[in-house]
Image (cartoon, rainbow, N blue to C red):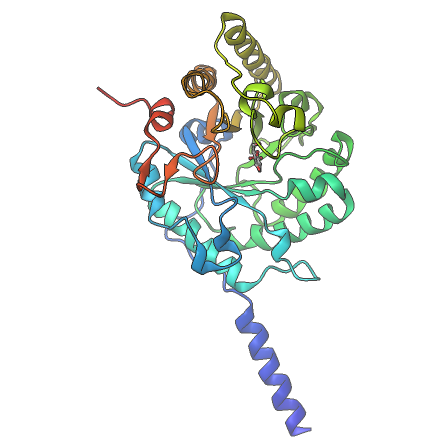
Amino acid sequence: MRKFLSAAIALAGFAACALAAAPTFQEPFTPIDAAAQNAAMGGGVNVLGYDPGWGDPAQFRFKPEYFKVIHDGGFKHVRIVLQAFQYQDADGNLPARWLNQLDTFVKAALDAGLTVILDEHDFEFCAKDAVTCGVKLNKFWQQIAPRYKDAPNRVIFEVLNEPHGVLTADLWNKQLVETVAIIRATNPTRNLIIGGADWNGLAGLPTLQLPENDRHIIATFHYYLPMEFTHQGAPWADPKVAALSGIHWGTPAEYKFLADKFDTAKAWSVANNRPLYLGEFGPFDAAPQADRIKWIMAVREAAETRGFSWGWWQWDGNFVLWDYAKPGWVEPTKNALIPPKN
Ligand code: BGC
C-alpha cells in the first residue's frame, strides 16, 4: 500500500510538472475597441508557421530576438501561425514544452512592442474532417484562452485560418458559436479575429455570421488574386497554376480589379460595422520580380487607404521577407511593404 501511495504521489507530482504554469504579464489587460486595435495593428508579418523548431527546438530558424528586428523595421504586429493539432495528445492536451515555447515567443513579441495574433492554422486538417477539427479546435482554445486571459490586449486570438473544403460556411458558422463561447468564458472582451469560409476569401465574408452583440471582433480576409499571378510556380497550388511561369501583373484593368475587390470588402466592413484585417497577402517568389513589387505596393496601399490593417505572408520559407543567409531583409519586398522615409 505504502509503495502504491508513494508511486501515486510521484505520478501526481509528475503530472503537475507536466502542466505548464500559465505565464504572468506586467502589463494588465484592458479592453480596447476593435476598430482602435485594428488601426494600431497597422502592418505586420506572418511568422513561425512552417518553422521546424516546433517539432525540434534545436532547429528553430526564428529566434525571439527577431521580434525587435521586425518592430524596428516598421511593422506593428506579428501573426504567429500555429499548427498545434499535431502536438495534441489523444485528449487534445498540448505538451508543456510546446506551451512554454509559445509563452517565450509571445512575451518576446510583446516586449518588442508588437501586437501578437495567435492564429490556429490547421486549415488543411479542418478542410478534410470538420468533426474532428471541431473537437481539436475547441480543445486548443480551452487551453490557450485561459492561459492568456491576463495577457495585455495586444494579444489577439484568431479562431481558425482559412476554413474551406468540408468545413462549409454553414458548418463554420455553427463551429464559431461553440468556439467563441469557449474563448469568451475566460476572455469576455479580448478582441478576436474571425474570417469567413472559402479560404477567408472575399466571397466568404457575406456568409460569415458573427455574434451581433459581440463587438470585440475584427473580421479578416486574405488576398492572393489573381492566383495565376501570385501562385505561378508554387508547388502546392492547383497543378494548372503551379505549371505557370512568366505571368505578369499591372495593367490598368488589373489595378481596377484590385480596387473593386477592396471596395467590396470596405462596403461589407461598413455595412456590418466590423473593422477589417487583411491577414495574408503576397505573390510567391517565382512571379516576375518587378511585377511582384508593383502588386505588393498596390495591395498594401489598397488596404491602407481603406483603413484595413495588413499582415504580409510571410517571414521565411517562401514569400521570403527575411534572408537568413545574409542575414537581413529582402530589401525590395521590405521597401514595398514599409517604404523607406527620405
Ligand atoms: C498557407 C500557406 C500558403 C499560403 C499561400 C497560407 O494560408 O498556410 O501554406 O503558402 O497560404 O498559399
